[in-house]
Every structure is written in C-alpha cells, then in structure tokens.
Length: 429
Image 1 (cartoon, rainbow, N blue to C red):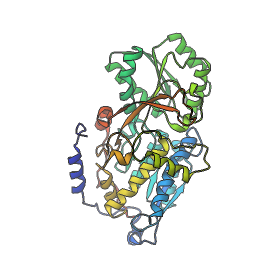
Image 2: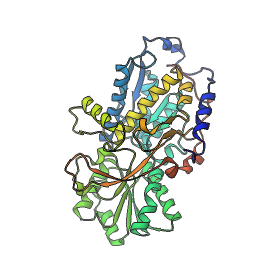
Image 3: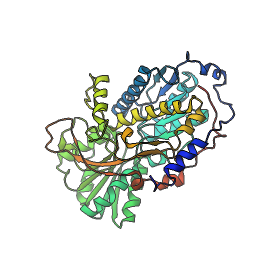
Image 4: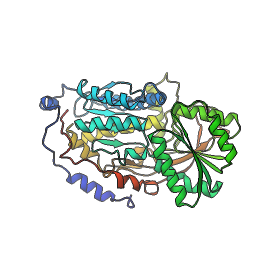
C-alpha cells in the first residue's frame, strides 16, 4: 500500500512504538481493578437500527456482529472473558442515537459501541462516545464526513465512503455515457456529502452536472423527479438514495422503462436494499465492498458459517452490510487480544495503522486502518445486475475491483482532526 500517505512498514513501526497509556480519569474508575477479572464480561453496546429507513440493514449489521461474538465466545471469549452484547434500536434518528449511546455507556456499562447505517446517527453516537472515551465502530455508514470533519479519536469507520465509490465509477461512466449528468440525492448528510464528492470528480474530468434533485428521507413517490430527468435527457444519473427510499425508486424507474437510458450510477448498493428484487429493478452500475460469490479463499466457508448461524433468515446469503458488521467486531476483539488489555487507549493504538491481509479480509487487496482518519482503506468493487442468472441469490455481476490507493479519499485526510490521546478520557472496562 505504498501509495498511501504512510507505508505499511511505517504503519507497523508506528503502531509498535505507540505503547504509552494516558492517565486514567474516565467514568469507569470504580471498575479498574475488577475489569482485570475474568469474572466480568466484556460488554458491547450494539447501536443499530431496528426501525426506520435502515431497519433491514440494521438487522443484517447485527447478525454480522453477533456471529463474530459467538465465534469468539466459542473459543473462550477475549482475554479469558466472556463477551456480552446489549442492543437498543437507534431508529434511524440522530437524537435517538445520542440517547441510546448515553444509556449504553452510562446505564448498561458497555465498554464498546458498534453499529450504524445512517451517517447522521453515526455522527451523533460518536460525539457521545468521544465524551466518555468509549471506542465506537461505525460499521456501515458511508458519508465522507464520518472520516473527515466528523472524525474522532474513539471512532473507526469500516465501510467505504461516497468518495471511494465515486472515484471507482465516475471516470469510466463519463467515458462510456457522456458528460451530461444529473444528481438525485437523499436530503441528509450522507446524500449531500456523497453528491458533493461526485460533483467534484465530474468537474475534474470536464463533464457537466445540469441539475441536482433533492429528495427527502421517506420519499415513496419519485414521479416528479423522474419526470425532470426525462425532460432533461442526461447521459448519466448519479443517485445517492438509500434504504427503503431506494427500493421505491428502483421499482418506479423499472416501471417507467428508464433503467437502461439514462445510465444510472448508484454510489453504493447495500445488499439488504435489493435482496429479492427482480433483476429488472437492479439497473445501472453500483459500488460495494464485498460479494458472497467472490472467487477468493475463505468466502465459501464464510457463507456456510452464516447459513449455519442463521438458517431461518429470509436472506439466504450474506451481503456487504453483514460483512462489515462481522469484520468490524472481529477486528475489535483481535485488537483487544493484541493489546492484552481492554484499556481504551491501548486498544485504539492496536487498531490505528493495523494492516489486514487480503486473504483475511476476503478481498482482492490488503486493507489498512488509516491512522489519520480511522477509516478502513479497502478494495472497492463495481457491479451490475447478473442478468440471466439461474440462482436467485446470485444477483450481482462484479465488473471491476479498485485498490485502496486508487480510491483513497484525500479530502477526508485533510479535514480530519483527531483529538489527542491526552484529551480522550481513559477507561479500563
């Protein structure tokens, strides 16, 4: 990963050298001695949606986290301690996310928080987590602001972001479909920041955005927006529309026969948003970080473990949201093992700069936790509908993969200002 700001050798060297622990002054002081006992479980607060726009993705996210926890517990837990979890619905609402984070930390005594799909919710959770010094893994929200201006020392971002996906798709789409573009954007932080990343790249490559249509969260009737698109006649529509809104959009585009022309780019396609839809609804080109049919070591076994763990779920194969939830949780627990302690500063340092080999990530390229932004730099895939597939679960046709160096978000590196270790409360949990 030599084209990243720091080299792998430098990352590993910096991580090995970072062994100092800040003075303890956090809200968990009364647990400091007891925390070393194997009688006390390691408690993780799950902050995923069970209702609202991202309820389906929230359920998939949770399943990934719980499978990782169950696998660790089957081997004796972490540092000889059992791992427990508490879940509270964040309702795809930032205000609820803040309340949930406060409760999980202050009342449920969770030492770690994991989960989010909505970037607004993730930002709200991370502000509370930083106040307490509680490590928070943002598993599935993908606004560039999460690893940019809204970064925090305690927060780690596990999904690709809107800039990563745009960098993988924009130039190719201009070359193939022309320079007249329109943006269709969910009117909240993820939509705005993703559209801004796309707009910047379109401008850089000399194309033109003729209009941007904002659609509120919860939109179910896209007829007026689609009429505007038909009238403008762009070569490409770049959509940053997610969750249940995207399902409604896809159905209406297919009903109007607009799936092939104009060309559609959906910045990122979450598996729970399209699983089970007709392939006619899966038009356009879209980004993802993982697919269950990748011909890579470990993928088939991972799918089998998912199916054994969740034999009754209607989603018969895992997708990218499940994958992110699993990988984030697994790597948190591995970081605790590397640190040899649950002390938050030690675990943060064990995560910062950590290199994850491609074979362990089941991706085409090695991944790394960027020490500057705390975002996982990883492979980004472009896909389209797998038309003609006889397997109803095999919905994606992977077109390309891009290395982390190619899609890296340098804007986030400039915008992110992590709090110092000294300014982050220290906890032993």
